Length: 94
Image 1 (tube, rainbow, N blue to C red):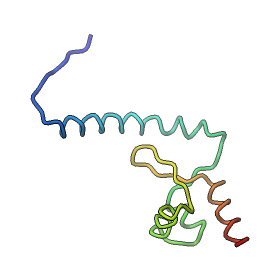
Image 2: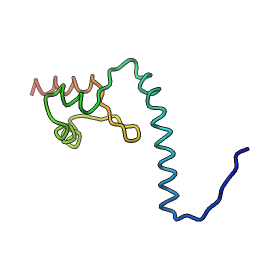
Image 3: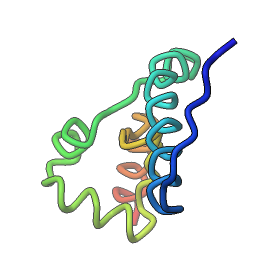
């Protein structure tokens, strides 16, 4: 049985602690989740920017405009290579 420590804390601090615990758990699951994406190649923001020949800021702008759809888990942002390739194909045919 685990020990439980009860302490006085404000609701914001309590929610922050819960959020941090959840985020830590999700970040530990990230490699497993990524491994189960049918071997889809996953790109970082820098890799995506290099592939498209743009800077990181442009990638964020593309995301805001709905041109690229990121995959997020906790603080980690990744892009599926197939989605980046679809963006490139659509851009060529515009």
